Length: 212
Picture 1 (tube, helix red, strand yellow):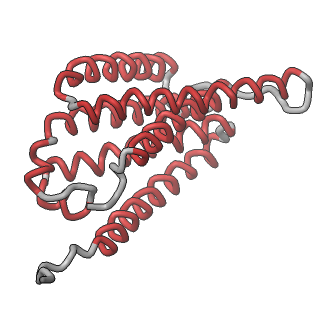
Picture 2 (cartoon, rainbow, N blue to C red; picture 1 turned 120 degrees about the horizontal axis):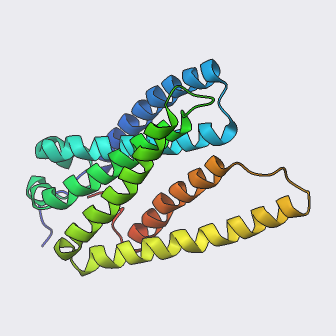
């Protein structure tokens, strides 16, 4: 006998989440590019600022969903409101780490002499972001179940596995004169972006990215 219960329509939820993310990303990047024109930022600074904005938007969107579980469950990837509420403590920490890291990267991309942010401020924010990420991860580790711990380890492994070949080939091409020397900020941008990519790969392989 067939059930009368219809499966949830996930397409609308996926499209809504994608549209909101794309719109927020467009506005944030548009504003940042105005600063690029004003201060003539380098390619590395623009890349790092762009990655920082991704961190900021990701953390900000999840934070809004965490503060308003009903809205978060509708737009973001959760089965229902109850599941979102159960994840609150872990999500708050993750949001904080993402937002602090995003602010630090944007600040560093706008640091003097090219940008308006004082060097001591930019460097201090980077140190604070690194310490905050370590402390938050340490405090939350016991709250992770086996799945989240596995994703954390696998995400780090994927990120490192992608980063090392890129750096070795990149460095080799610079050394033999086939590429210009790369900027430190570009290296930081690539590393920070690959952390996200590695996490998405690990989560995807575990079926965590399927819209629920």
